[in-house]
Length: 286
Length: 131
Image: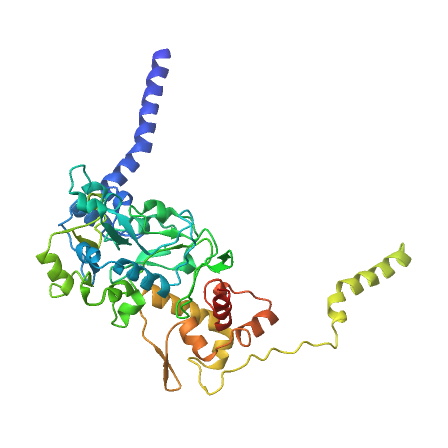
């Protein structure tokens, strides 16, 4: 009797484990663990598993079709022209009513300068020529091909548009800051304070551009590659600010005849944190 | 009826009190709001009736088209082209939020959150004067 019961319990236990585990295991096998690194957003599963297999850690592998805007930043030209970086930053921040809060903690920025070790931690080592360590690098949203922020956003407030630009729909942002945690470049800023507010009688937005709204408190913001201007056939404000110096070259990376493609072909360029597989669209000539 | 002397006056008091809001304001009809129409423009992007009822739907639709689908082409009204934008489109003609938008919104007691981010000319001036 005892023996029988023991057998019965064993079989029952085993079948329970098999019953619970098998569908989950099958699911994982079928989907190839899509959620973990799907190039698409939430719930957008078409071909996700397939592309994932190809895109695994490969930087030269698949190339997305259609337009893909990108930017090449020539660091030497920036450092040969003092004040140029600042000019780019103000051109951007003035256009988009980016508030200047005045302290590092609440800071909001779309484009800013970083030292070499911060911009390129993977490329940093002791024996790097000292010149590099004294340079500053303009950094902004990389408009990645596989943007982690888009995957993290629970409301699809941030998404990738048809031109490869990672856009923000401020209307939809609930301020959860998941995207900020997901972005490996720190390209996103949270409005801790009301950007229309002021401190010591000084408003955070010095000069309001009436053609663009401000944000409200509790919203995340970042560079949008001047998507509206691009549609009008204009260049992004930062690129426009560099003028004839060619310190920044902007264009369609998927068009072999575009100026960026030519610059990329003829120069050695690096990306920020390429090993993460986000495939940034901003390149640096160093 | 038992206790009729209490119930009937009680009912009357109840009816009077519960309809207080109706008879208190009787004969004192509020003016229907008259938002100030822009001078020199005859046509809006959609018929007035549609705009009166569904301008918010149109604004949401524009927002999704512009931001999500990248359809930023302009819309036509009375031979003129306008941007699909609250600040650069609508307020190109309806220049005053206070004299146009707010008139109906405060009458209907709605507070749309457009103005948390979008700005009226007056607001911009206010922000700039604070410098």
